[in-house]
Image (cartoon, rainbow, N blue to C red; front, side, top):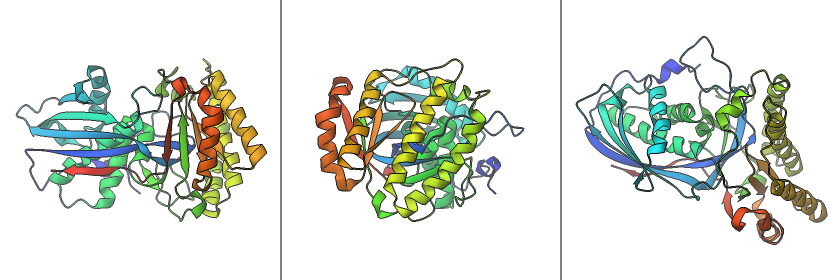
Length: 370
């Protein structure tokens, strides 16, 4: 069984003075939601451990592209980096990166040997209400692992991706699901081979063709800042009156969706995915303090989707993150009809009429390695 200690880099067979890499990493949308972290265990190395397993679709078009340039330096007592967003300094992002580097220092002790220039950009509009922490932290983790592979060229591909997912998790929990694979499981689950609380794993069995190229149109209902941060939201699960029941429900739902993805039962997929989305919001509405993360237009969209599906029998459904935006999920075979429905009936509920068309992707991608 893999433990945190297996990811501690201890020796290097090579030296690298300078260079750069460019990786892209996508966002993802959870089908069975991760909401709540385990409280600190006796093992002080462990952080960002999920209270329940989750499973997500990896997206294709909504991604972060990050350039990591590095130069060896003499002073190795502290981290040294410049942070750019779309080529311009972004000072308010730096504390999060600093905290991330501090979290992963035990596993990547070589980081203080270099000055880094991190230049990152998103393919989706900034402040669009789409969580960019997952794609951003995954892209940064991939770059860091490219540097580590230069220092240790004998590293296996399996270890490379496992550790990248492990590191990404320490920046943003769901980022570990943005590293590799179209459908990714994070969290130990007895029916998922190789599953772990420490990193995400690709769905281990064949997915039914019904879910090939599954579509996700993201309706941007509210592009403002989150009403409540993910960290605060996860912490609200501690002592939540319904948390225990939720943490029993999620593994069962993951078992159920495993069967659904293998058999191609879209009706059951719709029922489970929508229920999971509403459960996440119900947990926030019943926490203390309590929050309503949907907006009036979110509810209008959900009701429109239910009405359209009932009248046309076209298998369109929704899921939600911890916010107001709506992910409209549907098979590629009904893409034309669904997009027409979105344009005719749903776009009016979006802020400035904005929406993004996406679909299942494959994970992170190395763009340049030099």
